Picture 1 (cartoon, rainbow, N blue to C red):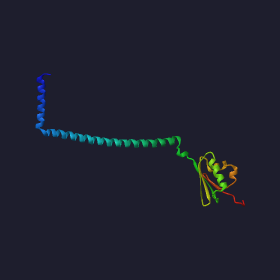
Picture 2: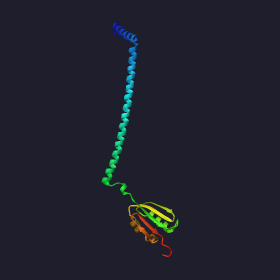
Picture 3: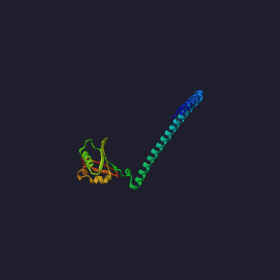
Picture 4: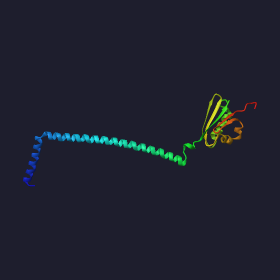
Length: 172
C-alpha cells in the first residue's frame, strides 16, 4: 500500500473516533438499544420455552390417551386381561377348631391342586375360610378333590364361587 492510502485510512479512523467522542449520547443510545434487544431476545426465549413445555405436556397427554384407546380397542378385539381373571372361591368350614387335621388336609390338597392360585386361609370364631383363585367354579373344584378328602366333610351349601362344609359330628 502507498503511504497516501495509509494516511487516508488513518485520517478516516481518527475522524470517526472524533465524531463519536463529540456525540457520547449516540454511543449510549447504541448501548441502550443493544441492551433492549438483548432483553427482548431473553423474553422471546422464555416465551418459547413455555411454549415448548406446553407442547411437551400436550404430547404426553396425547400419548397417554392413545395408550388407553389402544388398551380399550385391544380388549374389545382380543378380550380383556381383566376379564380373564380367575374366580375367587371361598370354602368355609364351620365349627372347626384351629389346626384341625381334616381341615388342614383339605387346605393342602386345594393349594397343591392344578389350576388353583393364591391359596390362603383365615380362622375366626370357629370358622375356617379357605380362599383360592381358579378358572373353575366351586362345584368342579370340589368334585376334583380326592374322595378321601371329600368324605371328611358334609357339604351344607354350594354356589358358583362358594362352598360351605362342616365336619360330621361323632353321632353321624
